[in-house]
Image 1 (cartoon, rainbow, N blue to C red):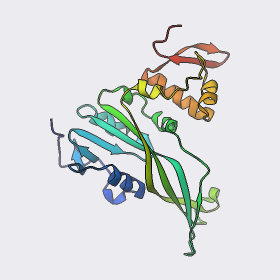
Image 2: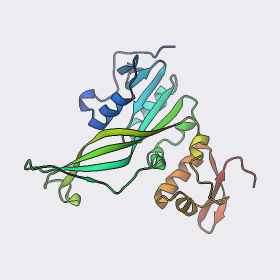
Image 3: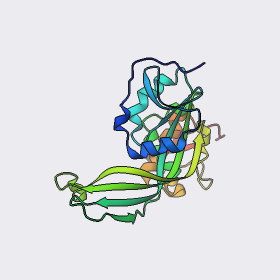
Image 4: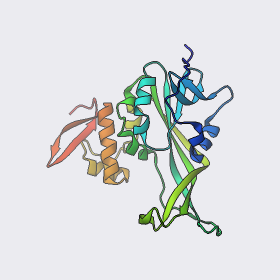
Amino acid sequence: MPAARTPTMNAISTMNEKALHAGLKTWYGRAGDRFEDVVDGYLIDIVRGTTLIEIQTANFAAIKRKLARLLEAHPVRLVYPIAREKWIVKESAGGGRPTRRKSPRRGRIEYVFAELVRLPHLLAHDNFSLEVLLIREEEVRRHDPRRNWRRRGWGTHERRLIEVVERRVFDTPRQLAELLSPALPRPFTTLELAVAQGLPRRLAQAMAYCLREMGALEAVGKRGNAILYRPSGVAA
């Protein structure tokens, strides 16, 4: 059934679109796609056949209600970029020559869990899929001594897409659970998860929480104060 269209819009105008979002939308689009179309009162980034595609560069909480409403009647794919490689460009307020350096940080697929904690149940919905893009990007920073004092006046102005280097689609919680390291003990704590995955403890905790809420992990007891987890359906 074609996506329903209505004259009202529950969305931000495309005039506020950021450079990274615009670049990803251009990269992702195909012939025959409809861009910035209105479906059920919401402005959709890309409509491809019956599928609604939303590109979100940050803050899943901002679109939680929108996704829940759209999933009632439409297949929805949420596209999220993670910077595998980032170049930081600094533009001085005085108009001097910009500087450019490569950030030592390298993003990974697992970083999506930091955002998925806002809507962990959605991947269990039959109409929902998640696509993670690993990208190379530029982060443009501008100097304003009146703001961003924690960064000595430097604040992020925009992010720009350089290249998409990898893409992964997740249709089910089980596919996300396949990111778990085979070196994990059974059962395991979030500290053991952090060590096995090579992730910060806080991100490992987000990963365990999301997979548990999706039904891909289950809590099976405690070791001291630490909760023990194992993949769902595994015999004790």
